[in-house]
Image 1 (cartoon, rainbow, N blue to C red):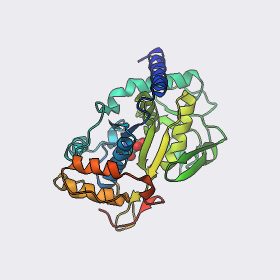
Image 2 (tube, protein in one colour):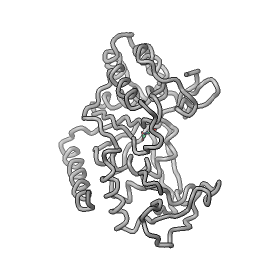
Image 3 (spheres, helix red, strand yellow):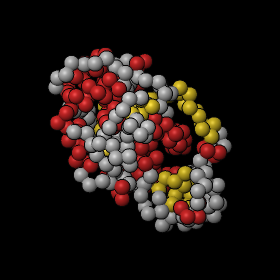
Length: 312
Ligand code: GLU
């Protein structure tokens, strides 16, 4: 894909957004975007339920996207487990599922666009050179290195970026002070999640993001990248995270249990309750989801970034 192709795709996506707004058509498009770096667990189910109910309660669309650009971290069979779970819990994506690893040429073309705008540069700093310093000081910004076989960083600026999260309230970051120029493409050629997520949310016409509060701190980066590319800003809702008995968030690293599809109705009920919603009648999952959508009330979602209770 060339820069011209991607520019055409961008214009089309923007025109589509404008005509949707004019016709008042589909003013809500949300998504569930798991990475196949391990099997889905109860925390993922909470995100799936909340993103689905919120989209459907707004008469919107809900779309599944598999975020599999980080090839070395893909866990065997986890993609299959994600698809089995979607099936067992009777979640249906309103458009065909997309896989980011099949869209690498799109992300490359967006990097070209950013190069033309002089917003990115090549960086030769290794992890070892950066040490424990989490804020990148811009060492390679003015070195004008060749892009070949180097990491690619986007320049950030010394300004506060703020957004109003639908659950967490106002959240701000000055990327220059808090993070520094950040990586869009790694030295090993892997496209970073930040780039892929922003490009696909735009090209797929997303309007709303509902995801775990562990990603709250990524949002200003994504807003900045979107601004550099001229994309409209999304609405965000970051859900509190289910904690295990050690007080850690459920995650693949903390060995959260894989969802057992044999218990789909019971697990679905637990996820609905963990989100503070009224119980539904135990039934086939799509009927339970229909009831959860009818009762959906974001005011009832627990406040803060953690859900108390012991989850596995
Ligand atoms: N792929 C990310 C994950 O599994 C979620 C991305 C997002 O919702 O923005 O953690």
